[in-house]
Every structure is written in C-alpha cells, then in structure tokens.
Amino acid sequence: MLRNEKAIVIGASSGIVRELALLLAAEGYYLGITGRRLELLTELLSKNPEVFVPEQMDNTNLEDTVSQLNELVSKLGGLDLLMLSSGTGDINEMLNFEVGKRTIDTNVSGFTNIVDWAYQFFKNQNSGHLVAITSIAGLRGNGSAPAYNATKAFQINYLEGLRQKAYKQKISIIITDIRPGFVDTDMAKGDGKFWVSTVEKASRQIVKATRNKKKIAYITKRWGIIALILRVLHFYD
Ligand SMILES: NC(=O)c1ccc[n+]([C@@H]2O[C@H](COP(=O)([O-])OP(=O)(O)OC[C@H]3O[C@@H](n4cnc5c(N)ncnc54)[C@H](OP(=O)(O)O)[C@@H]3O)[C@@H](O)[C@H]2O)c1
Image (cartoon, rainbow, N blue to C red; front, side, top):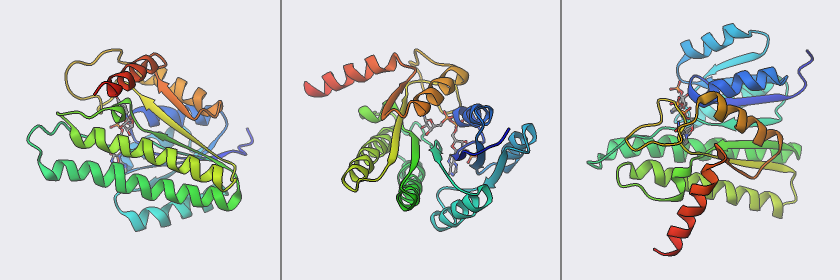
C-alpha cells in the first residue's frame, strides 16, 4: 500500500490512541507515534514496522517536544494530521498542589506547546488537520478532580480560539475537538461511571469524526445528550 497521508499520534503508548494508531494504520496512514513509555511504543512498532515511526517524548519537556516533532516530520516526509491525546488527571480530594501541577503541566503547558506547533506548521503549508482529545469533563467543574476538569475546559476553549484564528487568517486548517465521556482505560477513574465505552468503539467513532472533519464530536455519540444537559444546568447556575 502506498502511504501518502502522514500523521503523528501523540499518546500512542496506551489507551484510546494506541487503538487509534492501529486504525489509522489500517486506513493507509504513515504514522509517527509518541509517548514516554518506549517499551509500549516498541510493542506497537512490532505490529507493523513499515508503518510506525516511534519517538519517545515527554510532552512536559517543552523545548525537546518541538525539536522532536520537527524531526518526526522530517522522518515521515510531511504531515497532514496531528492527533493529540496525551493527558493526565488524578482524583485530588486534598488539593495536593503537586498533583494538580502534574495535570496542568501536561494538559495545559504540554497541550498548548503542541497545538501551537501544529497550528504554525499547518499555517505554513496552508493545510492540515489538528485533532485533540479533550473531554466531556471540560464542560463542568469537579470537586474531586478540579485540575483535570479545569484543564479540559482550557483545552476546549483553546481549540475554539485556534479555529477562530484560522478562520480570520483564511487558513485551511481543520480543528476537531473530540469530547469523550467514559472510555474503559486507566484514565477512567473514580466511582459513578456509566455509559462506559470500549476502547474499540470509542476509537472507531473518533476515526469517523476525523474522516468527516467534524468540529466537535461526543464519544460515544449519546454523550452529546449529557453535554446538552450540562449546558442547560450551567444556564441555571
Ligand atoms: N478514558 C476516559 O474515560 C476518557 C474520558 C474523556 C477524555 N479522555 C482523554 O482521552 C485521552 C487519552 O486517555 P486514555 O483514556 O486513552 O488514557 P491512557 O491510556 O492513560 O492514555 C494517556 C496517554 O497519555 C500519555 N501521556 C500522559 N502524560 C504524558 C506526558 N507528560 N508526555 C507524553 N505523553 C503522556 C500516556 O503515555 P505515556 O505514559 O507512555 O507517556 C498515555 O499514552 C486523555 O487526554 C484523556 O484525558 C479519556
């Protein structure tokens, strides 16, 4: 298969994006895959060495991340799609600052560094698709994990800002905000979970939303109802 389309998937060592990397490979993409756990990237590489280019990368090392992304693009020979999924978040009842800071470093600083890089890259070539996995959690605060929900709200708002910027600058960049509800990964923490999707089902829906160039997609789709309810509740706050 001739692999003309080039993508980077960030956070591919586990969970939703590991599955997404496999699905995108099946769709014919040539893929850069990143994460901190090299052994998991190597395991993914062994599934299809012709398709994956692994890069051990910690998104919180901001300068290294930029040079590593540039290197990956050179190795791939271009970039059409960047999918950013890395994220972290912990229950933090005691408001331990270090726990909150870890979330902010990854989900705010690491996130902004990467989406800004992608925006500039796609702006320079006047095309490209940025997909980021935020969360339904970004629509409301959460007393048990305040930093997680707040950082997801930041991501949602930032992506909207970038979309406005691309529109004003008349640049053909597509920006897709993927907002999952619960998906069965290590990330789905805490009690009271419902409508928990399998990783496979969620990933299939994410690939479809990407293919359809959606601005916003709730995963699985019925979480769109919860989003609506949350927005109405906000109105009555
Ligand atoms: N699962 C859910 O219910 C759910 C719901 C809504 C939104 N989400 C979002 O979906 C995304 C993917 O999460 P997941 O559910 O697939 O959980 P996951 O399996 O824990 O995946 C998180 C990924 O982020 C990477 N990561 C974390 N910190 C990083 C850092 N500093 N630098 C580089 N990579 C880092 C991890 O790889 P390494 O550890 O190898 O670096 C891992 O591959 C997250 O943004 C999460 O907030 C998940």
